[in-house]
Image 1 (cartoon, helix red, strand yellow):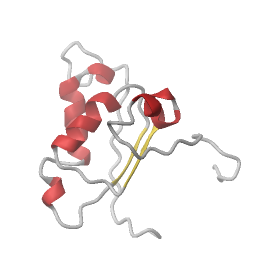
Image 2: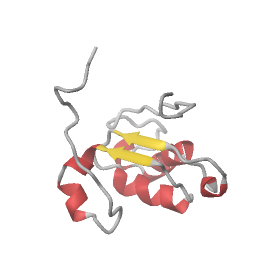
Image 3: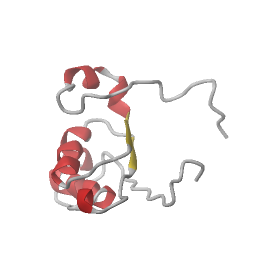
Image 4: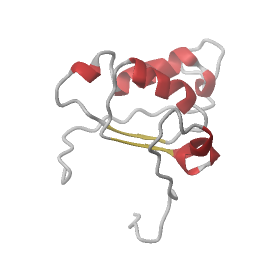
Length: 113
């Protein structure tokens, strides 16, 4: 709340499960991942004044399906943290999102419970 964030929506799933029962695991299931993206940033959300979410994604490969859907929906996040941004994915995809900053997921300066 110190940064004026007022709501928190956690969208959790198991990468290797098949939550919609269509025979394709969540990590590669386009329909399932589109639903995840739509929950985070619904279609037309870019037209909604003041709707600029911060999105944090701990993913393996899902960003290749989720990011285009977020753009299609008009999503304009104020910030985005994606696990693969610290891997070679960010270097290989600079045309997708040109302003990636990588960093470790764990750091001794952070306090953990």
